[in-house]
Image (cartoon, rainbow, N blue to C red; front, top):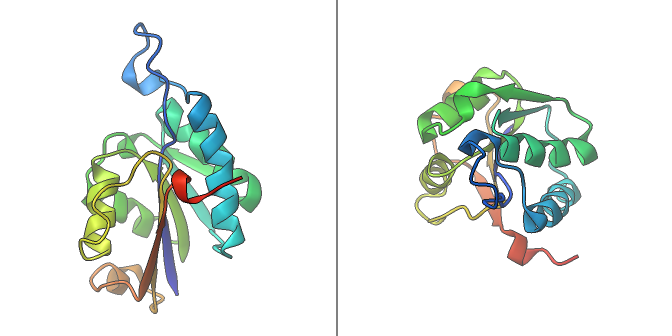
Length: 160
């Protein structure tokens, strides 16, 4: 079974105008939401073999929180910064693992979640998590067909 979790980075801090977009850290809400959403994903039984993330500070920090409950190392990829949906999906498939978490940015994350959910997911808010599962063991087949199932949660759905 192929499983994919899309995680949009948690909310970032816009307070320091001198920082480049790539270097913006998480704000207090993002620092609160990321560990909650990571634990929520872990509680569902999702078991990633790989976590890939954009090199942007806000995405890498979000990925660090997801590394905790799963004890899977993070692979930072420059190409995921501002990547379109097609590249996000290709990066997950190229990783070669059957279960992958991708932590990246909009608009690519929302576009990909929308495509994989048949249009049901219109927008991935910050720190939203969408999971997709295919009853296949080959990414080439999985990425060519609709997922067998999918889920979608936002920080507003998770209390704690």
